[in-house]
Length: 246
Ligand code: MG
Image (cartoon, rainbow, N blue to C red; front, side):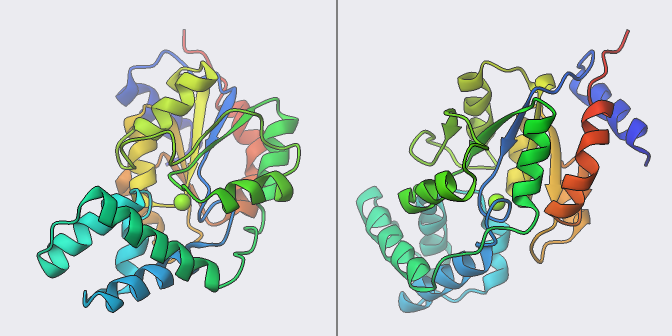
């Protein structure tokens, strides 16, 4: 499919009259940081310690749900246990500790370039993450200095994780934007589903083991191999995405 066809398709299924992109809603793990390999490892360790069988691949698929949602689901299906909110919070604390013990996840190659290209094009950059880890949020200030504005959505702001559109709807509301003014940048299938459900033009990046076709199936309008490829494509893409249909 050509870019023009992809855009025409988006306009058709959303019923939008056009696109006029002025904000990018940007996911964190697997987009800004190459952190998913550490998260999946920490999740498997937590589950195994609690006698729950699982593989790392499962946690790539679950990326985007809140920590508490993942814990409740896995303990129910894997051990037949109903976990309370307090128990889920405590278990998430243990998972966070395992994650930290693995060391600092590197900044995703190309992520700074993507943010710079958006800034250059006058597109607002808004962080939308389910993460509740304040250390990551502080790192963003340091690793992406001057590239994000004040507006952000974190795990502290949302009740429902992805694939629910709530995180992206909240990002748009905070930034006073409509779906046709926003692109979503996501690496996870559930994240693409959330961006799509929020009505935004959703861009997937295959920075992990999940293939392009799965992101497209989840609702991504376009998929790039990595953040560098997206950064290179962005200037022309943003021009193409600013069309008002007569
Ligand atoms: Mg992600």
